[in-house]
Length: 261
Length: 291
Ligand SMILES: Nc1ncnc2c1ncn2[C@@H]1O[C@H](COP(=O)(O)OP(=O)(O)O)[C@@H](O)[C@H]1O
Ligand SMILES: [Mg+2]
Image 1 (cartoon, rainbow over the protein chains, first blue to last red):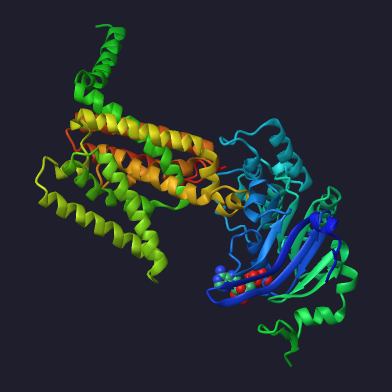
Image 2 (cartoon, rainbow over the protein chains, first blue to last red):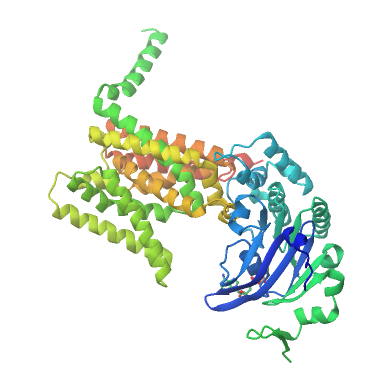
């Protein structure tokens, strides 16, 4: 698990989560979850439903308060990272009112708000960033449509475009592939590879293993805690996967892995 | 009389119809204040309807009642008392919600009726020159000088806040999670919106009274929402429709000698019904979509 021993590398870490524990009113959802993510790296977060993937994202964004543990993004606190537009987050369910009177363009422009002055007047550079993001997700032709008139997959792309327009160095994408068709899946996968070339770091949760093999450099297997973590080729073994998805359950007290059957 | 003269006569008749009321100082003042308050409440109504705060608007507007009474009794500006009680009621709603298992809409109903009842009791006990009817039903025709000044000041503050935080508040209504994730202080926006709601409720109270003020805070927004898919256009339509309703309402109440607050709100409701029936895309008759 000790991927980065060298201190120079530690300084270049985009995400550093150390022994994070989260409970919801006493019910443990995540414990001792540690993660390190380098610049220009795609990391897959793989686990069953209810394994705590979304909880991990929310903890990284400071939306749930960890009962224990420490989180740094780009070497600073989450709040600072957010103010610096260092991190973009696309939740599993956007949870917005889709009859809200805004166009696709307006929604993507919201990704730029944090970089604008306090009146949020878009500059040329903001408009370019929005247009560029829309181009990348192939939504330019629909930019003037109300957000509510898009299909589910198009809407996912619009919210992804908003995260891209933000130009953050860390992208947290919670199940971006859920409920999209094959063409959109391909588009997103290509997009993630492009973003990696721009040395962005991306954390993607999924339960589809083929994506992970295709483009994730690093994988985290989780079920309430991190079961395995490392280079995809090393971690993606059948034992590890059956442990993640199958008949094994972590022991919440010792944190060690034990057989359930 | 030639046809031309006849037309001219009718036109000047119409003008007289409109201009006559303006010869009275109290009417000029009522029209000015109603238009101003209408515009401000119309702007705020967009946020109220999009955020789903209709019930909250009702709660705050009722809860300001004891504040107004206490402020009058102590000789303080009524807006100060209203503001304290408006924001206080919301804080109380939040507190009870956090500490008990009672559902939020129940708590809202409970808190605002409690405050309102307190207001009624105080009015009956504190013998002063407060006219209960003015607070309950508004009285733009009999508004005093100091009330005019306070109302203008309140309107300026509300408009300023709503213009400066226009985008942030829209984002907060649309997607608070994203707002937080880009480092915007959503807690601040929440209380900012509640504060301007309390202030607007006091302003609205001047023209239509406590009981009907919630109409000023939601109807124009709902009407505009049926007419457009763009936020900026929605705010524009809401403000314009609200100003028209207020001015027309005051005129109608003058011409037919009817209660002013009721008249303003009835015009607003009529505009909503028209939009509900005939709005191009979202009206139930969909006149544009027949082909
Ligand atoms: N807001 C919440 N309140 C209480 N329990 C929650 C809440 N959100 C998630 N949980 C619980 O935490 C666990 C992890 O959930 P989640 O992080 O959504 O998993 P995943 O995203 O991997 O499917 C689940 O058992 C779920 O029931
Ligand atoms: Mg999830």
